[in-house]
Image 1 (cartoon, helix red, strand yellow):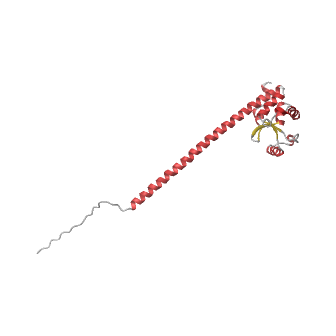
Image 2 (image 1 turned 90 degrees about the vertical axis):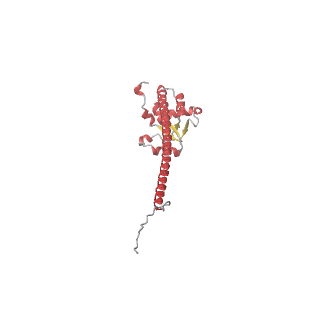
Image 3 (image 1 turned 135 degrees about the horizontal axis):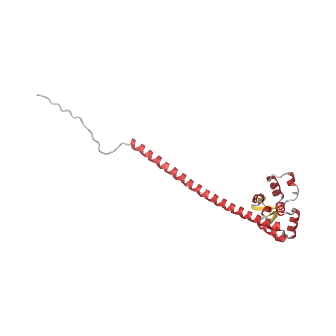
Length: 187
């Protein structure tokens, strides 16, 4: 397969959905990427059903299917062929598909899909690390806020004490000056 016929990362990434807390791709998208009819892909999966446990592939429930249809902006032509709930393939299920679809295009497409899944996983890890860092910074800032509040409360106490000291009567020795007047009387 030459470089021109390779699919773009964006094309593949846009076909990865998050359903049942898993990254999955739907049968119709995979069939399109592999260059086969959805009907043929489903036939191959049904013939090899023992290879696809529930953690590899599942069929969307009616509720999930309706939710998915409402979330994607599809034209009427995109909705054609969506009479049945699609099969959703996890990363492992997509790997298993490569063993039942033996065309060169399917193999090369599968390699690309696995690379994209790896990148998505790495991005999620990076995002998780960033979230942890942000939480640690927030925790430090909360502690800084508490410390600053404590410093201001101490300053308030000190200024209150200073005001009280100016109102108090000082104790200690007092120097008193008396004016002595001496009068002489003449006799």
